[in-house]
Length: 236
Image (tube, rainbow, N blue to C red; front, side, top):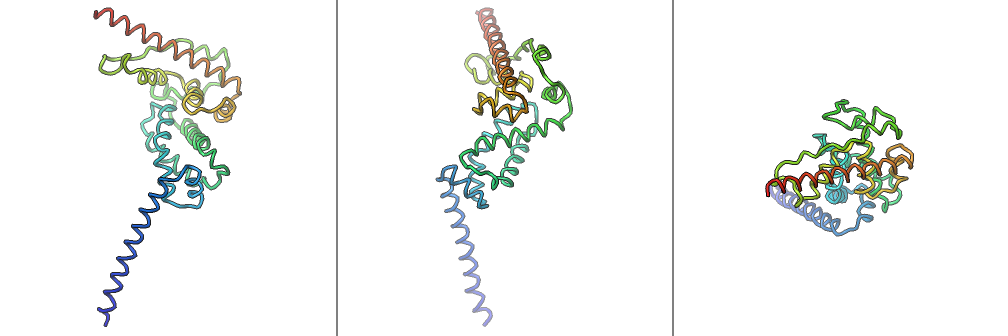
């Protein structure tokens, strides 16, 4: 009698498992078709599949922003995961889903500054420490007037046919106090007021540092171009 009852029970469990698997697959497919607003609302209802899709959409941009802010740090992937842990914990507090992108950026920058305070102040491995040590004013920022040279290797690595890589190298040469505001402005599209809030500085200071960063980048890139022209002429 028990054997007769066990068979249907076994088939029932298998059917339930198949239904769960099928339902999850359908939910995942449905979420991939949703816009960010609907996806965020689903996340606020604590729907894990919606959050998985949200992570897929934004994990590259989070990793990229962290790397632009702290190219010397070896644990960018771990920090990216920490960002999304914080997002999951606090996304229910986001009042306007349309502002998710800027809210995510603030989460990344907040974690970046937390980490900055805990990292050893090694100027070679961690030039970002300057931000935590110096209260900059126009006179003090003169210490950044000299443009570092870009360490270009051979044609096979970086030359004029790969300008984006050269710009990336130049960005990494900037000190943190100049790099962070220009990254937030040029790559994330934040306005001066938003950057001032995130970096806890005045709007005028933000504008000044972005101008200095652009000027230094232009000089580094000009020096790089002149160097390449000189090398090409020497070879020719």
